[in-house]
Length: 143
Image 1: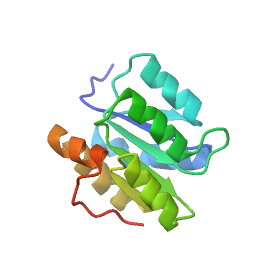
Image 2: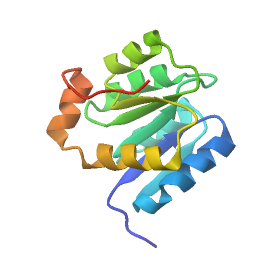
Image 3: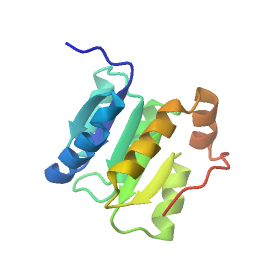
Image 4: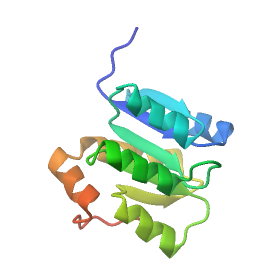
């Protein structure tokens, strides 16, 4: 069994896109967990699993990405979260920032771009993640 230093949680109700995301970042050498809804993803945290990065879709049934982010922030303040959306708008962008999004980007996302964002997020020191979660970061966020 392989030992991984980092764990990435991928959340998307589209199972084919979820598989695409997982395959795109498999080369990062991280443990990859996949969940098809926000409630199942929150259970990962509630079970005590350490997660180093979340990549979540915005539009999902039951609990959307922003609601999921809000629930994650109640569990941890410093976890980098990448919000993916096929329907980018200013309101979603600013709401995601409010919940400490590391990045907001449009779907579909290329493998190269996804890997670059994942690697940057995972290498971001805890102090940087604290700034992002508190909304004090000067980083740019793509829409």
